[in-house]
Length: 331
Image 1 (tube, rainbow, N blue to C red):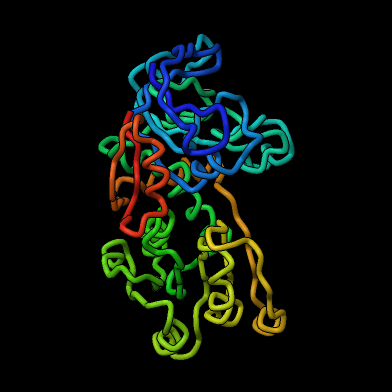
Image 2: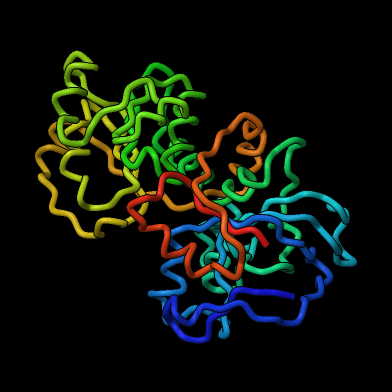
């Protein structure tokens, strides 16, 4: 079978190879991968993480496919089921797992970082990581649920966004941003996108605001009360503005360090407005189950699809100035 593999850090070392097709273990399922997402985490795995395991290594943190084989102790899934893959490795027995925080498992990690990932024709995964897809869900959306959708879904739960609150999204046209807009709309919030792309209105944005005049515009839109919840997936570059946009009892929820991971904070602007700062990562299996229940009408802006053979090109395209939407890999 074909797999996208590297033996040494660097995109120039990423290539398609023929490797042995895996066999499902007693508690596993074998998936014929149909679609995989292309994420910054995949770029980091290939280009900036020298200690990924095993080596040679297969990246791909986000994928979906059809079950071709089930292990002898698997009873809740069947051959032919269309499934998405929860991408967290977890032991199920530590205090974090027991409290439904599998993404924080003390003995776990991210599939494709501490295990091989989904840039492959066939993948054997634990049956507990496979979730049936709703009827009619496209492969494009399905492959985006484990990371691009679940990450903001979990973040908004942590931020406790409520109906009628003002909700603002940085990076609104990105992988997680378009889903965040849709979730904010489903909750009933007033949704504001910081973006140069007017098409984000099609994904739930009530207002689209340029970064340069964001403070003045949001002051006008909210009659001076500012924003209740800000979601920031961009990194340190936008933190000062994010904090300035928050109103009293505001919540800044964040993940990602695309523009840097270090910030300098004006503490008086935090405690003076009683602001809460929440860092989040991924999401748990219960949330993924809930997400599947509301996924049928989720929309996705697909920019380009690549074949496995063009995996390195797909990862480079993440940072292309021409990029305008989701990048996916087809096996």
